[in-house]
Length: 94
Image (tube, rainbow, N blue to C red):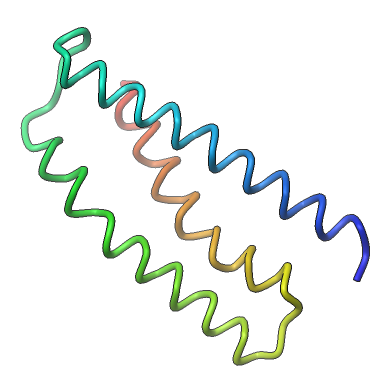
C-alpha cells in the first residue's frame, strides 16, 4: 500500500468534516433565525441520516466483498456521505 492512498483518504475525510461543520453551522443559524430557513428543513435534516448511513454501509460492504484494500473500503464508505453533505451545503448556501 502506498502512502498516497492514505493521504487521499485523509484528505477526503478532512473535507467531509469541514463540509459537515459548514452544514451544521448553516442549520444552527437557520434554527436561530439568523438566516432564512426553507420549510421542512428540520424534518429533512433528521430523515436523511439513516439513508445516507445505509448507503455508506452498503458501499463499504461491497468494497470488502471485492477484496479491496482498507483505504479503498473507507473511501467507498465516505463517498455517499460526502455526496449528501456536499448537496446539503450547496442547497443551504443558496
